[in-house]
Amino acid sequence: MNSAATLRGHAAVVQPDDATSYWQPMPANGHADPKLTPANTRYDALSMGYQTIAPGGRVREHSHGDQVELQICFRGRGRVVVDGQNHPLAPGTACFLGYDVKHEIINEGPEELVMLWVISPPGLEHFFAAIGRPRQPGEPAPEPFARPEDVVAIERAMGMNDTQA
Image (cartoon, rainbow, N blue to C red; front, side, top):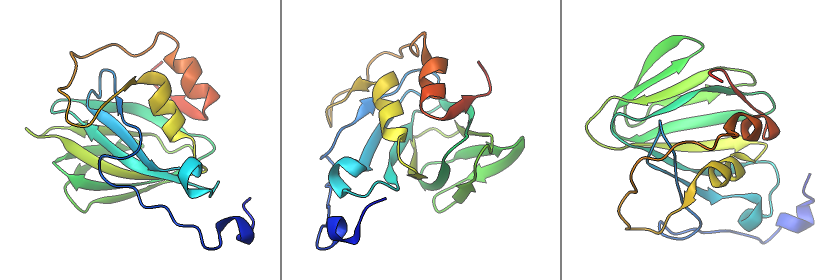
């Protein structure tokens, strides 16, 4: 855990086009944008970012065995399936997902679905980098691409449980 001296007087401000961004593979498509991570905050207890899910895309059902996740729908509409129960997603919808809670996000709207995520402990940013492709702000989306063949191993190494392996 960080000491108070490490964090005292330290702040991190990340602008919309700053930090890394990764195009995401099917079935989510879209992109993931980690913003506040231990690399820039010096705080090793959480990370935060956005995930943009393309129209018709989805984040596959999974759970986090060693992480707690908060999600807030920021833009767009769809649904989140939590332990098999459907819930509508609209701007302002907030989700708390404890250890081992199965969840899936589905964009059912005509526009991008943007979710803000906070995860503790951090690590989701490494998953997005491992399965994605580097993205530059403003560049057009690539053709949909497949997830890495070893995605289940990547997920397990990062504390995630893919329930659709």
